[in-house]
Length: 116
Image (cartoon, rainbow, N blue to C red; front, side):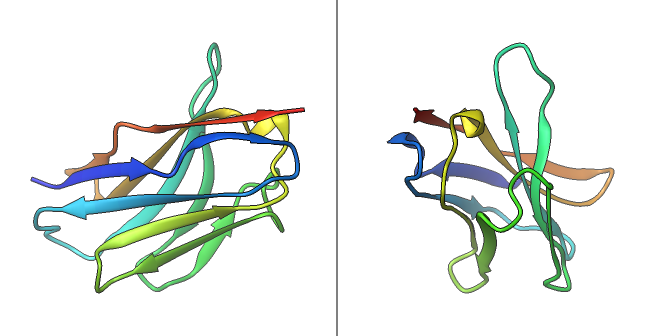
């Protein structure tokens, strides 16, 4: 069983930065893709960023040029560096690892609040 724990959320003013971390424990039975999602109250969970099993990254248009996804395979962690934060970035942020439909794992989320 894989267990993911996010950290690094908090409250910042617009223009500030935060670095989210996703720490994993347990055995991942396959090579995986890692994604960050976010969800605000009353909205659907939306894709933010991806780093796939080949190390290729993708970003939602709304965060391109501001957010950077990375991973540390030695520490078994992924990160989301968020710069130039905007109030509309306010959300609960979740990390997810998956390699096939039978192996999808989510963290419990970390709250990011950006004030204007």
